Image (cartoon, rainbow, N blue to C red; front, side):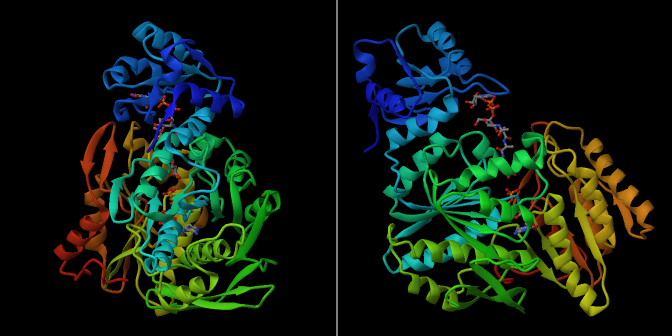
Amino acid sequence: MTGADVGALTEQLRAAGHSPILTPVAGYAERARVTGAAMRPSDVQAGDLYVAVSGARAHGADFIADVMARGAAAVLTDAAGVPKVREAAGYRLPVIEVAAVRDAAGPAAAAVYGTTAVSDPALFGVTGTNGKTTTTYFLRGLLTTLLAAAKRSTGLIGTIEIAAGAERIASEMTTPEAVQLHALMHRFRAQNVAAAAMEVSSHAISYQRISGLYFDVAGFTNLTQDHLDLHGSMEGYFAAKAELFRRARTRISVITVDDSWGHRMAAEATGHVVTLATAGPPAQAHWEVSDVVPEGLGSAFTLTHRESAERIRTSTALPGDFNVSNAALAAVMVLEAASDPTRPQEFSRADVVAALQQDRPFHVPVPGRMEVIATRPAAIVDFAHNPDAMIRTLDAVRRPLVEQGRGRLILVIGAAGERDVTKRPTMGAIAVRMADHVIISDDDPHGEDPAEIRASLMAGARDAQATGGLSTQLQEIAPRGDAIAAAAALAGEDDTVLLAGRGHEDHQDFAGERVEIDDRTELAHALRAQGFTVLQKGDST
Ligand SMILES: CC(=O)N[C@H]1[C@@H](OP(=O)(O)OP(=O)(O)OC[C@H]2O[C@@H](n3ccc(=O)[nH]c3=O)[C@H](O)[C@@H]2O)O[C@H](CO)[C@@H](O)[C@@H]1O[C@H](C)C(=O)N[C@@H](C)C(=O)N[C@H](CCC(=O)O)C(=O)O
Ligand SMILES: Nc1ncnc2c1ncn2[C@@H]1O[C@H](COP(=O)(O)OP(=O)(O)OP(=O)(O)O)[C@@H](O)[C@H]1O
């Protein structure tokens, strides 16, 4: 049963330090009951608290007529929103006014949906520039194995999908708004979900989407250039991520310390902090990865606990050393959760060790992440869309070519519009430095001119070619389907084709116009047209 009286909700916000003003002040307003909460007008259902924020595009209170028609029971908004509500609704609708609506939205939704400080389900959050989606899929793989015996389910919240056990819910953001997150926690409980893995984007932290949520364990993957349009600088980006690793929000922080940002994150995190070294310069970490050897397309590796010298051997089916890092992070997060005596989980530490060693929990497919479409030529679809991910992905796919001493790397790459423009020339430069044949094409231009985005990538690529004296073949081909067909036509059996940047996505957005295209089906089709054999879904894992 969800819900709260508006008066009680107001008191809870007061107790949380928000100085709310409830109008009208007397009579039915306090007794009015809200049974849900929504921030997007189209999500409002009868009885909901409508949370009206002031944003870059609009004020949520501009949509009050629609919200009333949908049966909203009360509104949470700021001083700018109150007159808009009054104009449309007079005094018929109770309004709670606060100074910072986004800050208050989480606690308000928590009260409505019954979220408590000891999270139910147990919550595993992952942040970092790259690896969030993959790590949450690995976490779900492991948690699902561990909870099967107790007949409990797992939850997942992230870029590709939201899942409550077997139920799938479409995902529109990496991390949804607070009202939806608290509603999801409630839904998870109703669906017998005992533990959930969740991606936490830096946007979510900056926009207070995780307010009112408490994490059993939060994991940090890495920090490299992206999203500078929002954060302004790497310092600002770091500061946003660091908010997750505070005692008040997270019980256990597991920080990958493969670079200096990781070390700094570990030093600044408060509460119980556990470090993990997976690569890079030797680090004195609590957990370390060693003995990485190829296993199928992926890798087997050993996790060693420095203090106890406990060694756990496990593996991942996904190619690339960075997927060893992602798998190790998922493993340590669950091992540490199982070792916390103050917060019992439904599985023991011994269960986790056994699952890691015997049940191959990191052999789950992750849609569009190093997804192998064919083996001769090797054809891979990946989501790398920033400089560091490109370097690591290109490094991983070119290694077998170097070892064989033959074959070329053919890359198709673009960049999304209305996102960090500074990374584009860098991405173009990386492409020509690391691939043999580069085709620059479109990603999601959103509202930008796609030709200008391609020009920015081409400029970086040409500069790098000129300064590096590189012989890389460089082409600009749009639309993306033509670029993919050209890449397949160029490929010989010993070559590797990598489509980077779009992963699982099934359509492009050109100024609001939706163009259906899925790199995986497009590449399979283009390869077949050239007479090559492609894998059936699931063959690669
Ligand atoms: C920069 C950013 O994250 N902005 C988000 C933020 O916008 P905002 O505060 O400026 O609000 P706004 O868009 O003006 O809307 C204000 C209110 O009016 C309503 N509105 C607004 C416009 C409209 O036409 N109709 C309408 O009803 C909105 O529902 C909202 O209630 O709040 C809005 C409401 O939830 C989000 O839609 C919006 O996401 C934008 C569109 C977005 O693209 N965000 C991306 C970048 C994002 O968050 N990405 C990260 C992942 C990043 C990554 O790792 O790659 C994510 O977690 O998804
Ligand atoms: N640990 C890692 N370090 C660097 N690059 C990685 C790592 N893990 C994955 N990548 C690269 O980044 C891409 C995106 O991976 P993934 O979707 O797991 O990350 P993400 O953080 O969820 O990204 P986004 O928030 O943009 O969806 C992968 O396709 C791969 O190229």
